[in-house]
Image (tube, rainbow, N blue to C red; front, side, top):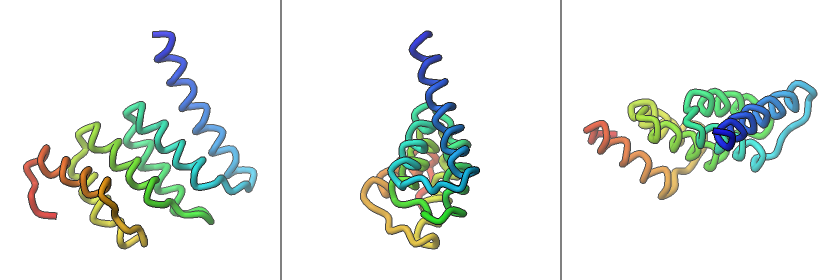
Length: 118
């Protein structure tokens, strides 16, 4: 329990610090933002990952492929298959070229949701 609580506090603290950076006008790097997406995804916080992705889109350094695949992973892991497929479908609209990992996650979502048309 102590390790779990420690991890929960760490991802929440990381998210708060990232938000604070934005509030003070700092532009966090892609890698820092992707680490935050990965941290919330690892804690099954798919909705937080999606909100973070949305916030990143409004920043000077928009999210990259890793931001999207991290969010897709969180959604698939938490059985949000339809949302994952919608996000996958919108990636090119945001200028993100899908890679093998993104396709694999979309296929997992299709199989899990019995949804074979993308």
